[in-house]
Length: 195
Image 1 (spheres, rainbow, N blue to C red):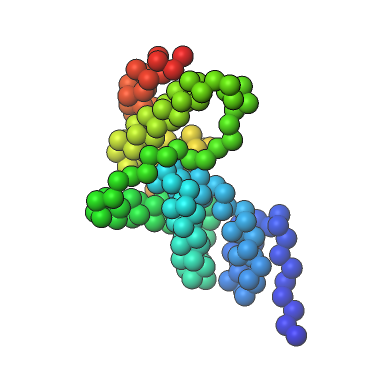
Image 2: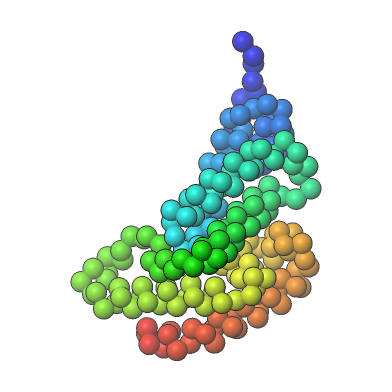
């Protein structure tokens, strides 16, 4: 019987990677459980379809499982995972466009707001606004869309975004400023109507 090291859920990413590279399968399970929800949100923000997002994350984790033994930890684990998921999500969107499939215009599933249960007009306005937000984000150039998603959806710091994208913090701030200004301009007519 082989003794395997016990992997704690609170172990650092570096400890988990080292443990997995040393043969500990449970370390990979902890990594998956730690990041699957965040990565699903990233994929969902690109493809706007929950099933596709879950498939993307599953495919990404399969790729990560096979690549993790060679991961050198020169960047943060989440940064690397984010890149794998984002690249896969973009590939899925490109493939769908090439196949001339209509994009799914269903917003992601969410729990209804109890204050709106008797107000279908407000729920419809919120759903319409959500669609306009997704469309406005989709219209952004990729480099601007990425910083918005990393900052607003994932809540990463400027430094973490810069590390993730391989650019300076100043570049991140500039791109974020441009993206927010563009979104404000694109969404202003809808925000006035929703208030």
